[in-house]
Amino acid sequence: MLHLRAIVPADRTEAVCAALADCAGATNVVVIGDAARSPRGDLVTSDIARESANEVLGALRALDVDRDGAIALDKVDLTLSETAETAKERAPGHGDDAVVWAELDRHVTEGTALTWSFVAFLALATQLAGIAALIDSPVLVVGAMVLGPEFGAIAAICYGLVRWQASPIVQAVRALVVGFVVAIVITYVCALVSRWTGVIELDRLPDERPLTAFIYSPDRWSFIVALLAGAAGVLSLTAGKSSALVGVFISVTTVPAAGNLAVALALEHGSEITGSLLQLAVNIAGMIIAGTLTLLVQKTLWGVVLRQGRRPAVGRRT
Image (cartoon, rainbow, N blue to C red):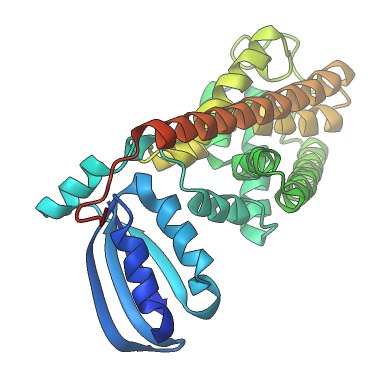
């Protein structure tokens, strides 16, 4: 269940309550008159089945509550209420399958913000990947994948394509390009300094790296893995019961390829430069394709659920 808290202008409180009463998945409606001071209005709360969230948010936005008041949705870990259970049963579909578009919009907006922390995490992850390339360590590759924050920006591109919105795509591409360029340059400079000071004793990357060769040797499996990762990453952002770690752990070989590219540039290893660039492009493209298709499938299937499984709300007037 989700908990709705809305500050509603007094002249729209009855309309909001009517919209909630009209929604099969809304229950436990509470109104506290003139409780809010900034912005001024009535406080309306309700328990909402996740699968009804888009319907409720759409109704409140149609009443301009988001403009003249405020709307907040919080996830409720435990609700002991017969009426809440009834609301979940009456709401069409299953909450885990529902995509709350406003929630996803917030996630992708945060993921495309070109912040200091975004660049710092990406640079640290790329440096870990560079070290992994030097010592052939799959453990460090996994560490780089965990640290890499770039999937949020990739998900934003998928979201923009599905919703036909250019702004998320532009912001996401900007974050990815600037973030990766800065991260690769930092790793490249660190690799050069390490080479000059003798920390890196290699003249070039090893020709045989059985444990990490996949990060600079793209093949059909690279694209297949990227497709699976893109689908899993989007599902981790949209599903009701996903682990937060899944969304972070979808770097696959984007960050590792960037780290390998930086070190290969520093050691002037031409063949691995090309392979790393191709691997990076293949993975980003594969994740965008799969992520976009996953969102389209979710949107289509949920539309079918709403058309076929809509049930009347308790007490709805006929």
